[in-house]
Length: 253
Image (cartoon, rainbow, N blue to C red; front, side):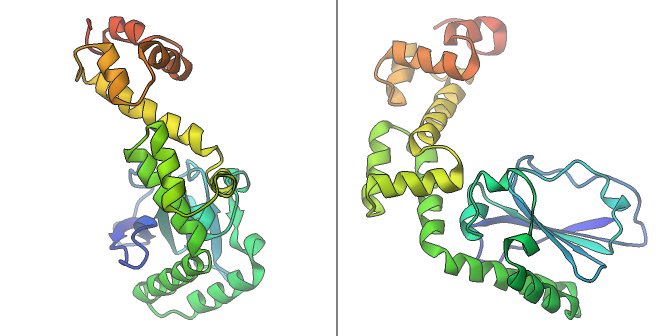
């Protein structure tokens, strides 16, 4: 199957990372899906049947040979992290397994199928799917914005005080924010913040962009060096010193 990427409409670009179309062509041959980042949630639309196969993948797409699928084409909408659950009002837990749109909402799935079946071109199908996703975003806009803003902010600002700042900016009680975040992301806001905090501290350590470990700990909001070492060991099973001595990073600090 041949493949090409479609430009994402500005109306949904805050939530959709890319759109991939696979279709039969003159030079089609058996091959795997084009390379993309693993773990990206997606909506897969398989054409060539009545009704179309419409499936949400909250974790990642299955490893398969796409040319062996009995369909005339595939449209894949890849979502940005932590957006697919809020758009379709599905919990992170329910998205651990693929979800058929007919199981999610039979009436909406049937209406979407009807429009896709009568579309005369790929461009028209993309317009229909864009409108469908945009409508779901608008229906669940408040939750979509809460998760998008919170995860984006904590990815760039992962100190403890930044979490309180997010809650204040969203004008939510801490309890409400905790409940919404856990529902759609699958972990607590503080767990997510700690993952982000560790990731950026680890990246700096890996690149050797520090003079003293205590300075690195302070730069990323850890209470002290001992706190950072405990966190590092929790996430990796080793200490920063052990990691550096393994030859994967700067040898001395």
